[in-house]
Length: 199
Image (cartoon, rainbow, N blue to C red; front, top):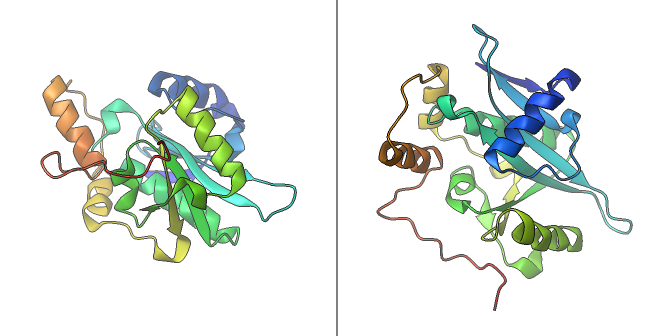
């Protein structure tokens, strides 16, 4: 398995996958994405995007968004390696912080992202958060990562080394547990008491 920049010819696959997973395709550009590929079969296992916002009167803002893992590749660290590659790209572009607007904050928290108050967001992302809540993810909260603080959990790095497609259809209960684990959530301990900016 390896992660690389998306190619123009993968635009249709990306758009179809984004739609199937109910992810954000706002201002879609395939060149903003990275793709995880199985080197043996050539099968694409996951993807994600860095979106750069360019306010007129403020520094550029880097947002991590639209991370998706194909169902039969879930639970194997694919999403984690997408996040890692995107953070590397942000670092290469000299961003010190990366923002994310997500409904499953525990997943990004394992990499060092921290929830922040809505009023701490740059204005451009404040507007985007409101739109995302209205259109795609009503429970989205803002998070931020200091790029230098990024960490990859060892368990996810190890899983990725041996990743392979899962041909057995899990039951709904098994699938829910696997998704919770993929997103770094302990169902018995998880809480979602983050500020959503709603009063």
